[in-house]
Image (cartoon, rainbow, N blue to C red; front, side):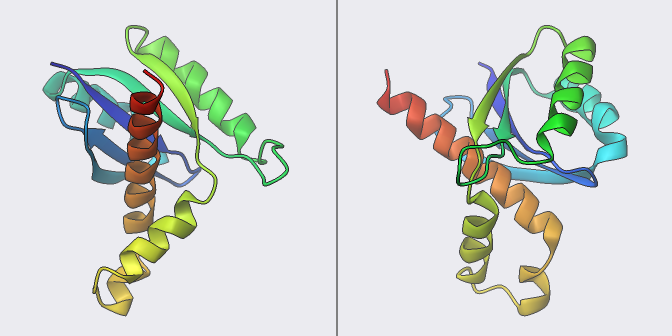
Length: 140
């Protein structure tokens, strides 16, 4: 059975999360450097059967695309060229970083670990993916 991968895109770091095989739960996977992303994906896709990638769609409260959207579109074009067999879907990611910060703050981790931006990125990716799974389950 295949899994889904979620991406919380950033120009420096990319947060990643992955589902279980039944596509019920999302788990924070890792945070990677943007410059190493495609090498990482190549290795990951050899180890894991990923059928779909969900990429966060950052919008402002007004519904207007955020300024990073143009960079995400370029990333998606490169991704599709390198991995044409993997489906890409976008999903609204508004408030995920704030929610991730709150989840981490309530986890009991020390202040230094809570402020680790790479932890926030991968937890944000897990929130995007879990929200995507919940949304699609309720719309079946």
